Length: 297
Length: 237
Image (cartoon, rainbow over all chains, first blue to last red):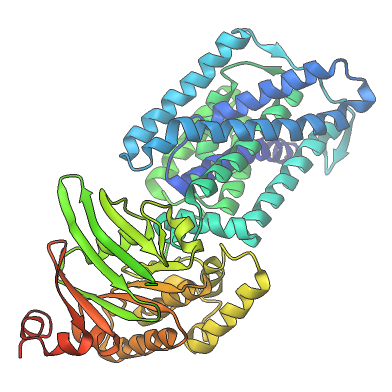
């Protein structure tokens, strides 16, 4: 039982990290960025390249090195996200939502098959794997590396939440999300705020990509496809556009999958996850913490 | 030097020719009313000045500086601030956060606090409700918040679009009093109104526009007396 909970929280923290970018971008320009999962893939490959360039890794140095790679990868993936918005989405700001959505699907394919062309279709073995020392926590087998990854994910999420709720930049982001025109009239450079949002969301996806590479030990150009859809599901469960809701949605989806797999068998895992998506879209499309705006006109 | 000079302004929306060679000026420290019917081009004029809409011809100068086609965020930083139609307060942010956003472009945080304190002194209702979400305020309070938020940016010229819209007569009078007070402290105001009677009470001068061009101009007193204005905008003589 506690093993199921732990597994669920572990996978769920990955989902949450990726889902946050989905949710933030949706919140600010109402775009379902279907290329978001591919930024996670890109992050995994960037981390792979950086680790390769760093040469061999001694076992004792694995964790500090991984953290360094994580930070570097977050920066580069963040910039890739900014570039994606600049090249593919900005010109379509005033266009119908459907055009933007189709462009996002196109961007997703471009990233996937671009990576296949650049790096080949075969999976790559990640050059760093963390030691497997495990301990018992409330009867669940937990490895130190899992603990480290979850700790990093939690820190990133806390940091993001503070940034958005407490800082001047975060306030500007929420203003642009609510009403870009009114935000511009307050002296906020809307384009710059949107760029920053893409940077943050993509950086989190990049971090998740590196963490997934280090955890599963294998990466390939399609690895972002399914997790992109899962992250979307997580965002819908929690309330897309709502940051704490999205974190909650990620963790819940991880738990649901963990228990669903236990009861129904591993082959039902994705069916279960997307079944939940459909359920939420029909019954509660605003998600658990989705914003129901009370407004007097 | 005039606060604002608009010269031969043309704006097209797709196939619609919304402004046709519109010219007007706002002097330093002046309140100027811009009157006209629905669709005459009043909101378009303000949007073209604040950079939300790009004019196809003509020139906009603010304190002698050409700002035609500049970005809205850059124009705000110069001290020319547009309070849009329908107030557009940030509905799920608190009143205080709305005001803080007014100070977004101001570097000095102590100055932002001072300005917010001044807004609270001028508009005590906002101080009482500083923790409440903007969207839960009444219409009049939202209008006060929209104006207060603009004051935190530190404007020398305010563009106000229909501040009286949808408000009860007593509240309209209160809003107009606030505008008069803001002007008394030296801020010039370009006031777009359908409520010509209320606008001409506080304005020094006024323009009447029709179909995107200026058809009549004069001092507020002249316009109040003008039979054409009276018939069209003041509900007959």
